[in-house]
Image (tube, rainbow, N blue to C red; front, side, top):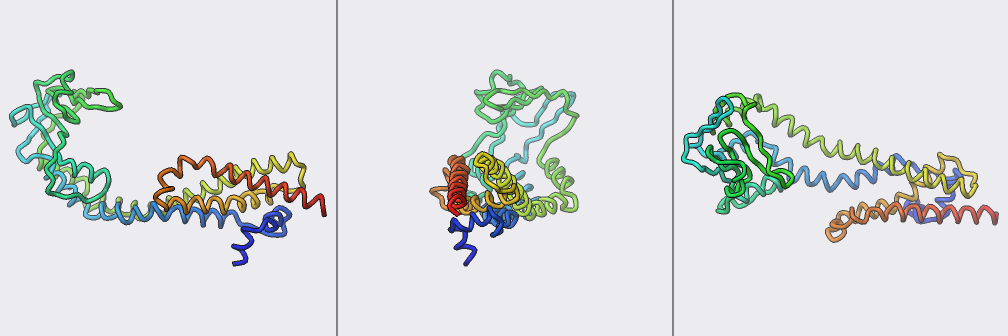
Length: 288
């Protein structure tokens, strides 16, 4: 409780400048980073972790839903042939696509469809838009949108292959042999919060250091007898409460939507407080 009271006491900060009180920037960085890690960690364990469990089973179910059982595509010498009446459309429920992007479960009974791929070996790239699909497979190329432009990928570099549902599922099982992909993915998801925490601790310490350089310049200009080590502790201490408040505000929906857009205000507030503290220290020193 005394430490909390000290954080709101001007004397505590001036004592840091003189070395009579100590503030540990590393512990402050760990505490602030832990606060900021809570929100992404909740998302990771609540939304991502359930997705990566039974990954092969879910992937095979997705293949069953998206890739038609009757469709077989052959590529030989860079040319496409199929066993279906063309143009042929590979579709997916809109809710399935949105569910993949948002990592949320959707109603399986919805009927709206999106055309993932149009197949027309007699089609042309300049007719792409009339198919109203995300991509078009012609006899010799794949046509698709990227960066608001129509892109053409020629198939002449593709080795001869046959694509059907069974071949895709066999490839998935081969890639995930001994369940290795799922194991790696699960471990990666479980370790993600620790990587985020480590990165945020490093980021906070770098921010403390950058603020210290600016505050130390203020000290040199005002010719105050304060060393760099105490300046680092002082700048970190002054940063702590504003950064903590800013971090906690990210949990409030109303503020979280705009908090990053206004984040430039945080260093301004911190430097303003730091300068006020230095003025107080200077005046107090002159009067003592």
